Amino acid sequence: NAGVTQTPKFRVLKTGQSMTLLCAQDMNHEYMYWYRQDPGMGLRLIHYSVGEGTTAKGEVPDGYNVSRLKKQNFLLGLESAAPSQTSVYFCASSYLAGGPKEQFFGPGTRLTVL
Amino acid sequence: GENVEQHPSTLSVQEGDSAVIKCTYSDSASNYFPWYKQELGKGPQLIIDIRSNVGEKKDQRIAVTLNKTAKHFSLHITETQPEDSAVYFCAARVNNAGNMLTFGGGTRLMVKP
Image (cartoon, rainbow over the protein chains, first blue to last red):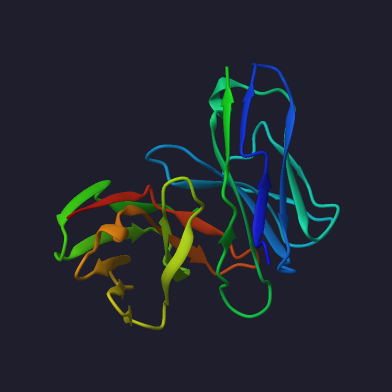
């Protein structure tokens, strides 16, 4: 099993450009999450999904959109990138059933917006 | 919403010494407290977790303690080794359907040989 994979690994954008980050998981997890990681601020939740076709806002959703058309994929879109969106983005997934479940993280995408 | 504070932000210890990282949380409804380790260039990985009905949990050289009354929890690493060098994150989960975690700001642990 590959676990959680993210593409691309690195990307440089100019202000105003758009892009989509792809997250895929092969563990049949129901829940998927997008976080951003900035120095000294830990990981902050951008959006999450509790199942195929559903999405919800997290702590810092402004400037981002997401889609979960297939259970195994969770896409994060930036319609008009801004320098404040320079960050490392992590995708994670977890099971639904039962109590709290471990979140499995991907390797991250480092995004720079000039 | 939940707020998690983590201290210290950096910690340097000599190999073989112990390391302690502390976190406080704000929402008394939080019921699950995982700790993640992030090595350079990789995503965070769960190393230990504790639920609100337990006061302490151990796994070999690592242990976590929880004080619900004071709303704080700590990670203890004994007999540190150079491979323990990494960034450690604490997190808290409020009992809700989304299994959402709120993370602390992270601690960079450096173990000197």
